[in-house]
Image (cartoon, rainbow, N blue to C red):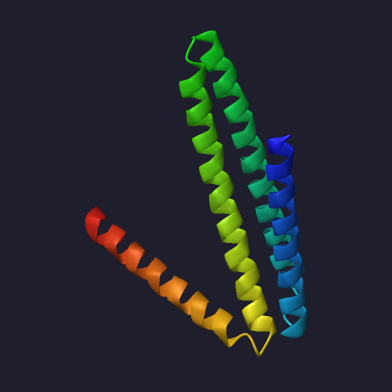
Length: 133
């Protein structure tokens, strides 16, 4: 049941992001079938990744029972699924907020939040690039 709930949440958030993206593009007169196709394929890939992660958790749990390490396997599977789920949920929420911030002129707090997140992302990218060189 928890897998159905996780997939439903991801599906709803992906749908909301896709719809707010269409609304944003329509409002800016920038509606493009290529962008919609890319966005739709991206959302489909997110659902596939979440489904594979749920399957991985089930598989790890079954494998743990086979090797008499059910507790350890249950924890590792739950951590993997939880991390992927959390990442996708946060990514979708941020994207929905970005779309809302561009649609609504009154959403100053959203634009401010998104700018802070982008600055943090740039700093993280810069520090990773420095480590790689």
